[in-house]
Structure formats: structure tokens, C-alpha cells
Length: 244
Image: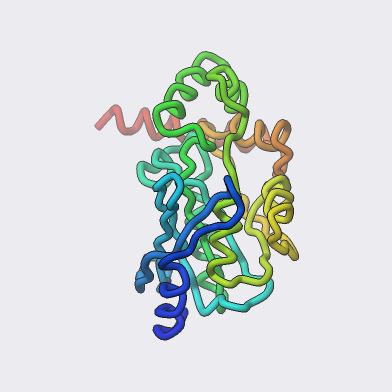
């Protein structure tokens, strides 16, 4: 059971002509809601549009979250290479799938999918950053070398989306304390954290370690022995494939 149809109609009515009064504040509107059966279970999908920058964002919802407190919420920034192509350079797809499975176990929850590719620098610059990483820079150094901050994402839109869905407080599904602080500064009550960690692989181990050391993410230090075992396994698979 998700948001009831009469409540959806009311949300759409309230959002139809919504305009933020605070100048320069991120502003979004709920524009459409539909059922979405997924491999991780049944959800509702909510389309948001932004009158200011014409970006489109999404929410996947389990249960009727309106007026609820301590709602499990995953704020997921778009990652085309990971989410769609299955890239091993990051942990984005793994985290998204883990969040979907975790929320499927619960009575209610929300995943906000924000169009903030490459930590907010866009797809083209993200691939440029990959090129610099192949020359030895870490993920944050690569963004800075391109003239950006290490992380350009903004969670003002996420805060607005949660208010539009009438969520009263959340349990944040994240390893990033800075994300919780940003949301709290925007008036969202963050009452706890649900860790959402996945094991490293040989291609994203440095990426995750950079998150931990430079980004302050709450992750376990990478285990060299485990990574060596994973690399040996991958190499064995490559040798096997080449012999076919």
C-alpha cells in the first residue's frame, strides 16, 4: 500500500501552482505519481520538476509516508556509469540496490533520485575526471583539477522533496555525515542513520578509501588481503575468458 489515490490527487493539486517564496532557494513540484513494480518489490514513483532549472528528479516510495516520522530515506545522486552500465569504479549501483532491498523489508521508506551526475559536475566532466584518475589523481583531486569543488552536490532539492511528500523526520540511509548536516541545516529532522556499505572491489578500493579518509565517510579501512584475493579472482577470470 502506498499513498492513496485521493491523497495523490491532493498532492498534485497543491503542487500544481507551487512557487517557493525564498529567492534563490531550490524549488520543485510534484508533477506525477504512478505505481512502479520493480525487481526489488512494488513501489510508487513520483516525478518532480524544478521550475527554476527545469531538472527532473524522482522519488521511489514504499507505503504512505505522509506525516510519518523516522522514515528510512536514501538520497541517491544519479550515476549513469554505475546505475545503468554497472561500472565497478564506484559503489553507486550497489548502494542503490541495497537501499531498494532494505526498504522493501520495511513498511515504508523513500529513495530520492537526484539528477546530480558526477557529484554535481555532470556526465562529460565526470568522464574527464576519470581520465585524470587514470593519471594518478584521486576522485576529489580530479574534480578540483577541473576547477570544481571536491563535491558540488546540493541537497536543498532533496529537502524540498521530503517536505513536499510531508515526511516529518527521517532515518538517513548513508555513510556520509556531511549529508546529514546539510539536510539538518535545511530544516529536515534527521533522527538516525542506517549504514549502507558494500564490500570494495579492486576497481573502486581507492575511491572508497578517498571517501573515508578525505570525505569523512563512515567506512571500514580497506583490507589489503581481501583486495588482493579479489584481484587474483578477477585476473583468473580474465585468463579463463581469454582462453575461450
